[in-house]
Each structure stands twice: as C-alpha cells, then as structure tokens.
Amino acid sequence: MSTRIRTTTAAETPGTGDSDETEIALYLAQADPVDVLAAGGYLSGRDGHLIARQLRRPQLRQALEHSVCHAVAPDPDRFYQGDEEPDSNWRRRRAAAIRDHCAICPVRAACAELALRDEDPHGVRGGLVQRKLALRLKTEHDRLATARAEDTRTAHDQNELIRAAADVQRIAQQYMGSSVPADKRAENKAAILSAVERRDTLRRAHRTQAGWEEAA
Image (cartoon, rainbow, N blue to C red; front, side, top):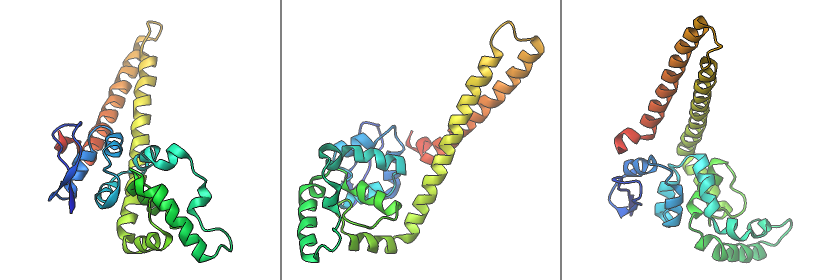
C-alpha cells in the first residue's frame, strides 16, 4: 500500500491510495506540515517510512518532539544492550521497550529515519532492532547518501537566505536617516536593491526546489 497525499490545502493530511512519492513531496512543501503529520499518525508504520524519508533533518528532529520518549523520558538504557548482558535477557528487554514505547509512538518512522541519516544502527530506534537498522543502512545506501546531501544543501540554502535577509535589514538601516550624505544614500539605495534582489532570488529558488510553485 502506498501513501496518498492531496495538496489542495495546507490543512489536509495524507491518506492511503495509489499515488506516488511526488504527491508526498508536494504535501511536505506546504507550510510546516510536521505537526499535522505527527498528530494524524502519518509518521508511523509502512506509509510513515515513505513520508519520513522525504523530510529534511530539522523536520525529523521536530517530529521527535511528538514521540512517546519525549513525553515520558524513559531511561535510555532501555533501548541498548548492557555490557555483558545475555542475549536472551536483552531480547526480552528490547521487546518490552518496543511494546511500551515504539509500538504506540506516532512518529516512530521519523525516529528510525533519523537513526539511518545519522548512520547509527545501535540499540532500538523507531521500533527497529540493530539488525534491521544495519540491513536498511546497507540496502538503502544510495537513497540515504542522497538524503544526507540534500540535508546539507538545504541547510546551506537556508543559511544563505538568512544572511541575505539580514543584509537587507542592515543596509536599510544605513540608508535611513537625514544625517546620511546624499551620495551615500544613493549608494546605499543601490546596495539595498541589490540585496533585496538576491534575497528574493534565493526565496524563489527555495520555493521551486521545495515544490511550492507546483503545490500552489
């Protein structure tokens, strides 16, 4: 079963159907969908994995704010095998951890995806045991490499956009005020127009990359 995303309004949430991952991407391009996805239980189970793998790293971390672990703050040792702990004991303990936390967690797919992005297959993450995490790291190597590169690119683009917006404010403050000489005001005016153009170009590029133009 694949996940169906309809993108007519930002308030709508994904259901299941015969759509492909393009619809998921278009939905995720809407304004801050993570809280809605978590509240609707769309970041758990098989369909949740399809959605989680298209989230960027900050969104995955945001999703974990809705996790069972965030709410009850269990002992982290519950999710890791102790030194020299017999395998039989560990299997019982991890089964209990999965039952009491992961199985009822609305964002367990996001938790597992974040572990994969971090290349951290140890313990229990998102209901997956170490063996399954390691297997996914191997079989999804290319996808995860692409996802990590996209995380890096997105973070860089966001930092550039923040700097561009700050430049607009900084130059605007220099431009304002009657005490600024006329020739300097003209110079600052040209500089602020250039800064605004750069900021808007970065915004348009971000919208296009995120699919907002199509979603709109």
